[in-house]
Length: 223
Ligand SMILES: *Cc1c(COP(=O)(O)O)cnc(C)c1O
Figure 1: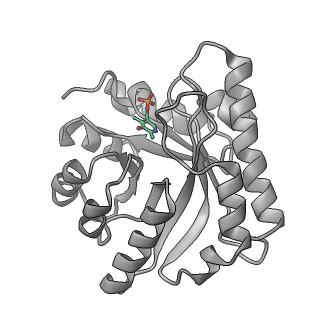
Figure 2 (figure 1 turned 30 degrees about the vertical axis):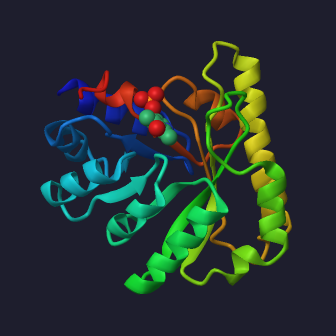
């Protein structure tokens, strides 16, 4: 068994029921993705539109492609026909662009709201206040071609596990507030995407339903 298939089996065997695994395959060649595929993995996450578009025809048709990186509005149109879930909706402008392009393509696209809770200045995403406001003022309900499936977030890149747990807790709390409030009529609002190679166990303990794991499966990124 290869290291990649071993990692997939180990992860798939250790994740609690109700937690999905996104294999983050950015910067890895299709041969590596195929090893994961042959080990049973079907959900792959990519963070750059061009790389995603290039890989799709080289992989089997039953792969579910998730987009997880910062998405520029001028790239939205190119990924709409491909993606089954966009994790990284980080602004109202991007959300509206996805809605518009999905409409033109005759698709309804599943998306997550990326929340900004980490201490790093550079991270994109909605504040708690913005996400509650947009849910409450009817903006989400007015968008007909996107389905808001949940939230996504990243913790600060730190060794401080208490800080990481606190930030994941905050993401889950926003999800719960929306789920019990403005999104309560939407049963499809059900996904909390949080946790990467170094912190997915903390994320699961704090209520993640979907982890995005890259280097722990594929090793260091290759290009
Ligand atoms: C790269 C990336 C991951 C995976 O990171 P690893 O540390 O390699 O597991 C997860 N989520 C996002 C948004 C990423 O960009």
